[in-house]
Length: 31
Image (tube, rainbow, N blue to C red; front, side, top):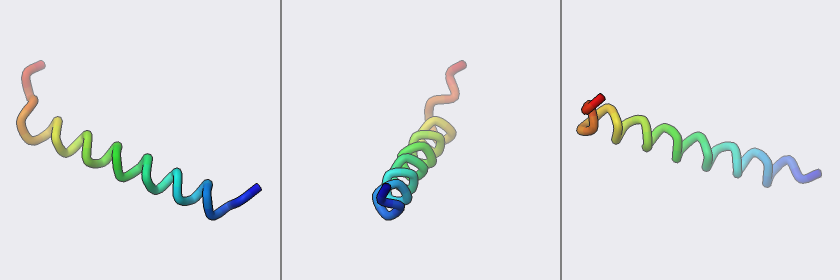
């Protein structure tokens, strides 16, 4: 198993999640 790939994927997923949450927090508070 390649830990580098796993770490990279986890980092990318984390970044995407963070950006998604940030965008939601910024303008789409239309619950």
